[in-house]
Length: 364
Ligand SMILES: *[C@@H]1O[C@H](CO)[C@@H](O)[C@H](O)[C@H]1NC(C)=O
Image 1 (cartoon, rainbow, N blue to C red):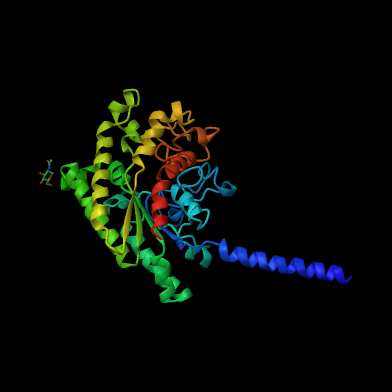
Image 2: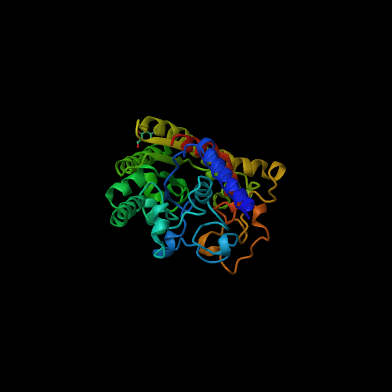
């Protein structure tokens, strides 16, 4: 009886001794981490905002979302998660970044960040008008509305602290070229901007203005995504007569437009950096081109130039729907529809830009 009690006391003491010792010597000083992830841009990062506005640019129906959590078509333009979802998960915030306009969001969802992005949007205000998408200016207004809401919930000071410690991500630009300058908007945009250099300069003015406003609102860490190899998107190849009949090769001029733009973007971001706010460039051009060029030989893809949904050459948004033929295994495809990558491709892009995310984390 006595010995058993004594034994237990010794064990308890030992336990307390070791746990205290362990706690003192082994627990690293907690490293600050991002409070939230806020996302702006187009369909590459829209988590379903377009579900709540009048626009033909929707994807909240099958087969979209086929491989998402619970197989839900959320309004993401792919079969599963987006790069922004993988980033939020990697930095330990949450498994996916929800759409700001979703009325069912709880305060916990809002506190860890949301996406303001809208499929069809772009840096030229004319671009979202062509697809009835949410302009970047309106996305900024929503962010300000978000801030006011949070101030009511947690106060001004904590809201500003939340914003200061958050990561921001901006991903757009493709629609400015493929929908606007070389597409529907051509009769207007190519008159105002007779060459692509002048159009790019106009886009950069808009980007700089948007980034400055984000800084004014308290953003301290802002990642900006470059352009993909636009000339290799299945739909771009289809709509270019020469490329379509020429073995469906990538449209070269569109590739150099994208790579020139990416070089200038990196320089602009460097020039905008201040002691308070850091900018990070995320390159998606190389990983996407790699998948298209070496996807079959080296990366385990079976189809790199046609989408999984429909014919794979033209369908996106409403044209990819419940009546479309869909491939069995989207993870073997680089493209989900004729414009947007599969979850597998987005995951590959995420892995490629993960070193940039690590730099962001190191800056905390
Ligand atoms: C492009 O257009 C602008 C005027 O909008 C002009 O000043 C510039 O010289 C042009 N550049 C080229 C390369 O043609």
